[in-house]
Length: 88
Image (cartoon, rainbow, N blue to C red; front, top):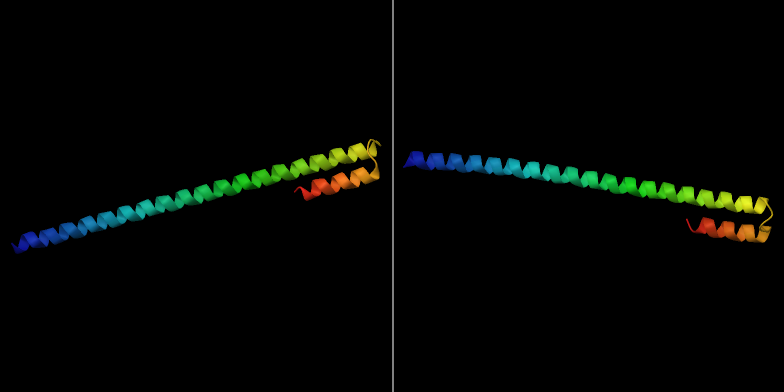
């Protein structure tokens, strides 16, 4: 009977070790997935910010062309320029 108990304890320990290793592997995979998701979100935010900045630059450039061509006066130019910059 002692041998059966000994084998049972060893088997239980082996199962515990396997379960612990599996849990660690799962946690590692979850951690990597979370890191990947975080990096993706940061990349998307950065891309959006870059596009938004480019859009602002395009608007300001277009506004300057309107002013330089005489289609809008200084007051209109300054007001619209302030509005565009504040929208950032």
